[in-house]
Length: 230
Picture (cartoon, rainbow, N blue to C red):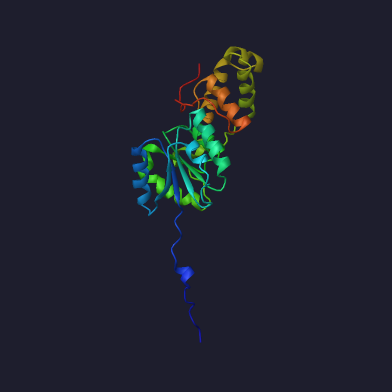
């Protein structure tokens, strides 16, 4: 006779919700986080005004705690706070809540140790599900920036152009060096700008530093405007 297995008490239990630590400057932000988390039955177990406040606590976060850190990914000092936070609480995944930024900015947050990025304009809609996802080992970023988060794949010619841009050569000088038309150089630069999510030569140099050296504090990177580079 065939018998059906009966679920044990352990099998029938709902998944344990992770404790949440919120780091935000201001009561209003904490209230928004509380409201957003409540949609999935999550609640904040500890609140701090800055990352330093949490790092200086004697008791470290529980291993299964998720840290929600409100900061600006384009602010070098705040990214330094993120890296310190990830060093001192390595077992607690961090979700960043930031103003909307470019793919380069999101990548900077991930390089700094964040496991998820939520834009503050979408906090109520996306924070709770992002917290649940990172708690089980996933990484979560805004879908519209997924392509920008990936390391840009530059062609051989684009690498050549970039190398000369970093040396300070003008478009005309690069064209002469590579035996190409100046209009072709502008076309290559437009493609490079779009891939890196930048819109000026200065921002190109900074973006390359981010890619070459890893998670170091840098200046902000506005999104590419789609215009032809000068």
